[in-house]
Image 1: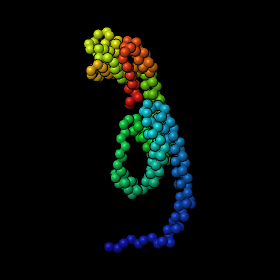
Image 2: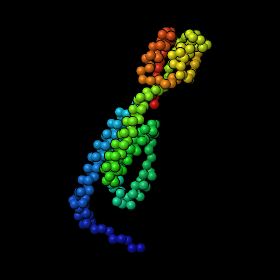
Image 3: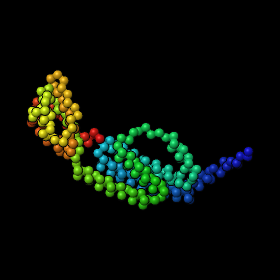
Image 4: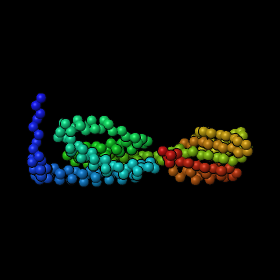
Length: 236
């Protein structure tokens, strides 16, 4: 079997120098421009996600958006002209394992949005990336406005007090007071241990600003009980 002749070492330096001049320099400058555009779009997407998401860990997720976009642009720019490099990329990605769990589907959608921006810019289609960002922004703002206008969520109320408040379902009982204040409720737990009882209920249709009114009304009806309210949206 006859091996292919190897390239002489003397030719390595001219080829390296050619990559920094002429077409190589033009390609690098073009890539730099697309990287700058992608970085700016990714920063905008990060701001959009941080301001519209109700995920408490939104900022920790959004900080990877610019880097993800830049990496995607670079990878697509390298492999788009070479079938061999494309197949090599598939093989390299097949051994990558991501251990971080995506708890919120919204995070995954924004990650795909950044990848989509990187794919468009890597394929030298900046207008496609811009249209993608504009249309995605419109949908995000519309759904965020609809969610804000409805404003209804769920809450969890815990009432702890004397055991006598938890025996029966009369007007003076803890359950009766909670039912009068919040008719749309589901009892999750009712426990009496010795001289103390505990009632935990899920409240539905709770709007922003309802918590002080609910707690105030229950403190009037149950002055000898400790009342705790948790907004369910804060647990999402």
